Image (tube, rainbow, N blue to C red; front, side, top):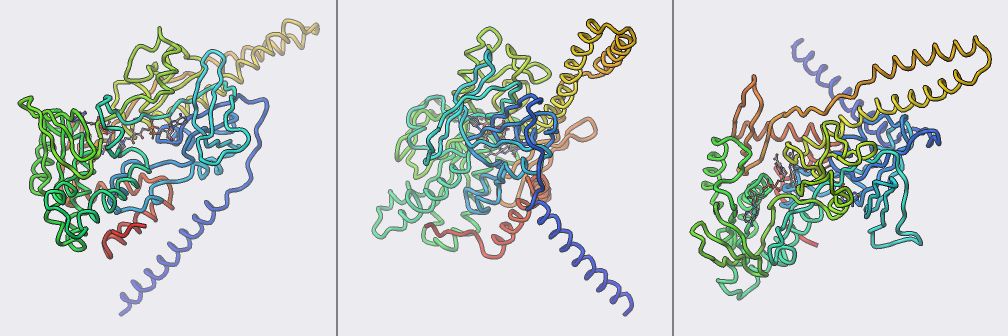
Length: 507
Ligand code: FAD
Ligand code: NAI
């Protein structure tokens, strides 16, 4: 009896304590305190983008060192790994985004956030031009500002290889609006409800219910897996007459899907997809996308036209126009078409003294992943702190040296020279270290409550897949989410789907 009383009390105290702490954290985060204003003595640091790289930089950055300006067409950070879950309605779209002001308002010095798209970077005059791309514009919608240092983190856009019809007819899976568009088109205008219309021709129903995903990289695989779950968990209940006719085909030009994962995980994914009735067409290249079909070059080089209701294009990355334009301004140093070339300190080659580039917009030996971008962002924030110290010391040294050279009083001169020596020693201690990437492993969800993971383990690799890995996948992403708010919303969405299923209604 005493033991039960003890357990009861302990549970009550933990619940009250936990709820109190949760409430305290949310309220503290909700009402950030006053910030220091811009300091005209400080250098201006402009950060382009609010994605993985730039957000990680802003989180770590000591804003007392600089006057920081953030320019991004989206005023939020998007947690891309869970984007396919939004596409099928497992998660709400607002659950995986967080306003960038949430970070900047918690910094010591005020950070200016501008929702705009950078249109031009002038590396010679050190200016950026940006424009307001929102529908409603004020009297001024484009302007140019100077920078001392620029952090270039604009990411990449989806690669189309200029294949005819891709831009016009395919859905992408890169931005939040892509997932929203997919949800709309899948449920209503292109597929399910149209297929359910009375008297629909059987061949047309078959076409409407055929989903094609192009690209067997992690984006295509995760989306196919999520689509399969949606079909099994919900559509079978709410569209019983259609569910058996829904087909998912994954098209990949290479001999296998997920080339970056180990062989056994590739095999595991392919066999899971087989069980899930997801067709994988490898060594098959998309040549054209039409409104109602996709043209394929089959492994034997024959051409086949496959009818489909909805096609998702996830065929990799390519540099944005602004990145190509910037690289074209430094043609001798920027010779890699894949993206911006940087040195070991993430300084853009050709503009080493002022531009740093991070994440998917760069061409490095690392894969274009969130992991790389966020490590680069955090590294750069630490570098910028050292650089601020260095710049201050260089300025101080200059002043002391000119004082020592001009001051008539001998004692004053000696004092200045002593200080020059001290500053020189301090300056010599500031050593900028090159960026080193630490790979934490690769994870991907493959549907049917299964995930795969290649994890570094004791100087080797641990390849694992299945339901336990799925639980690991969930907890890993839950803990990586941006804020307590995001974690709470995502966990609540998962619980809601477990209890009530996904929402198939559309407004
Ligand atoms: P982004 O995060 O794309 O951010 C670029 C930012 O620049 C955005 O805020 C954008 O609005 C802004 N911007 C664009 N144009 C301009 C402009 N002209 N001026 C100013 N700002 C601009 N990686 C993993 O490691 N693990 C995963 O599980 C994973 N899952 C993914 C799932 C999906 C569906 C996708 C699409 C990607 C996934 N990735 C994953 C890859 C990861 O999202 C990218 O590598 C990462 O986003 C790169 O970060 P970034 O900061 O370079 O670019
Ligand atoms: P990707 O570049 O990894 O894969 C694209 C695939 O599309 C390639 O395998 C390519 O062969 C194929 N392809 C290209 N053109 C084609 C055509 N015409 N016909 C058929 N197939 C074609 O791109 P993805 O998946 O968008 O990923 C981009 C980056 O984001 C990668 O670095 C990836 O590692 C990262 N990412 C990581 C995730 C994870 O770790 N879970 C999830 C999603 C993305």
